[in-house]
Length: 159
Image 1 (cartoon, rainbow, N blue to C red):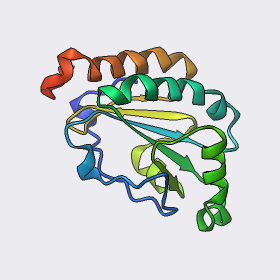
Image 2 (image 1 turned 45 degrees about the vertical axis):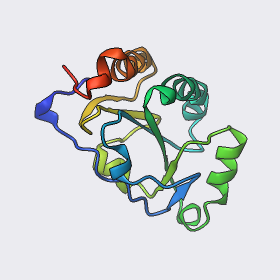
Image 3 (image 1 turned 90 degrees about the vertical axis):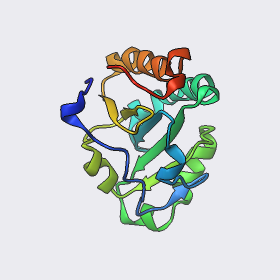
Image 4 (image 1 turned 90 degrees about the horizontal axis):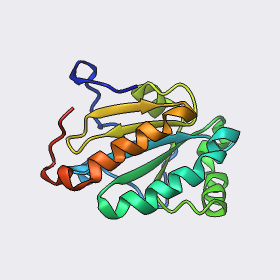
């Protein structure tokens, strides 16, 4: 769904209980850059199926300023204590971007209740789209294009 200013959700919570895979991200690193939060789980078949799409967005939009952060929503206490399984999953699937290992609190804070889930934030850190259905992937792509295209160089977002 596309969101407007009445549904202001700032990009502020990036402190996962399970830590980080690949490299940690601090909110201050995101200033002035569009951000895609990609919520997924290792045991979610459609999450795995959509990794190629996410990898395509990474190749296309990271060079244009996008920050992609994966959020593995864990399902067990042992996974939170030992992130080796998440690290192995990331390595096996070629995921090199930062991945937060979440106990569910990040997903809850951002209102993500199904996986995979995608949140797209503009350069001001304001949530502009939440997508959870396969048929929304073209809408996500269009928004990423808009946020990283030539008209986005001012840092402003015109709804």
